[in-house]
Length: 265
View (cartoon, helix red, strand yellow):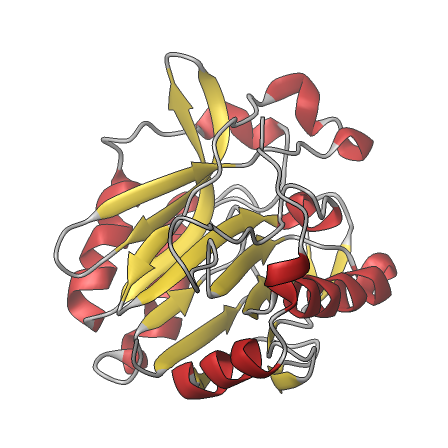
């Protein structure tokens, strides 16, 4: 496992404008070509967080899936973010993880945001995902998943000595400004309890429902210390996470050896 360069892309997503958002985010990330290993876009980056956007949901053969794969190839980096995608099972809030070799994995948001009625119109995922990239095991999750520590828990596999489920946990979000303190607090909690790095991207600006977003995108280390934090404005920030520092922390403080074994259902 080598050090990993992570780029947080904190944008003001256009409301219900997939083509405009592809152009907007494409312009923001273009300067990252050859300068990063992983690019993280917000949740529902083509539409904003909207139940009404379900009517615009594309399929896996649509323009946005092709776009994110093209961006990964152009940047020479993995690119991830979530969009509304329609399948025969319904419309999912689906996180895509594209790599420059043409690889594409996805994770469907498990915990739908009942407070905003997301559970009434979208289908829930039922499988957690771990992807391997540049030697790192990465667990991507979406927004409201952050509030459920059992589902987000890093498990120790006794059949693979020294191996935890993941080394880096990702969150993509549309997390409104009035709940900014829980956002920042829970990101640090997930990093500390999971003995991992956490990288999280939230949007900024005001959406079509009048909700304001403060950003607060960040990369947090295994002690809960932020390596980079973004203010409440559009911005792109790149930082490097250290494989050696993570391994050293797990060796000095092997809390995973005393953790409870369990299965996710």
